[in-house]
Length: 386
Image (cartoon, rainbow, N blue to C red):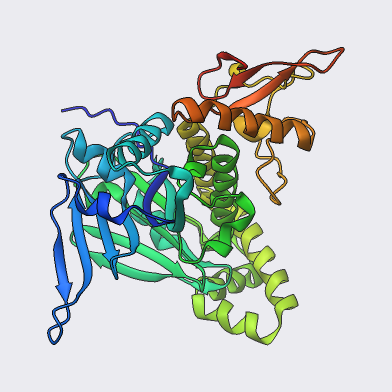
């Protein structure tokens, strides 16, 4: 049997803290069946938990509400596709998942603060996934852990504020395709504060998703890989020494502690030799697929993203991955700050009538700078002002 699978995924696990929740409304929602944890001595209920299609609701002290779970698995579960996250999950699906939770439980996405998040992509790997995993040495000098089993080929690098994960998704779900999963698990939101992501509503903003995609690619670029099928006989004695020492993660750990300048120079030398003698350049080839897949996930088409002040394209949304202003949520389209703010005010006016995640860029009259309409980046259609 021949399988065809587009292995897309962007936002997966998420942990939300709800600001000023309506506890009584949540507790009395007929869709939630609560389990309780009580104090044995006093009988006081300390914690309530309930499940809804893969999403966990937790009430603490009868006043704090926390929501956790995989948005991808939730989306599949409510549609009868099983609790899995290897199939398609693009921006449209993400939007539906957010709306499903928000509307079903009368939650305002702007009041749902993101406490933790996992985001990444599944890609069809052009080489054996396990070879790529085996070649990963460290990430920013920190060595990878390794978990291997019958249905698991998994590696991760644990930092203080986030975890880098790379594993064989096809093996995990017994798929015939060579599916490689690369993701970041954010433990402390300070790590991605510059992306502008704060609330559940923010994960639908195209400029924030773009910033997350750049964060993903930059972290992939920081992985140190050994090469595939390097013929050591082609190397001179010095080159063989550099590569043989560099394959050892502990070598880099010790070197970084001893002398950071030497560490940096030898790392650059190691990377250049791997690129020169390897049969497959993992950082370039896989890294490129990570970027391309993220852009596909956003649904961004170059023909629908002209810069409205000159007919150019938006490189940050079409694969160019130029650097963006991470101090806020400004769109990369050569608009002034007051224009971006006006766009957001317009979205607030629209969402006051009906909650719908428009992603709008303002269109101005060329001579007078009067606001004419907005371009919805998700559809390429023009939206009239109200």
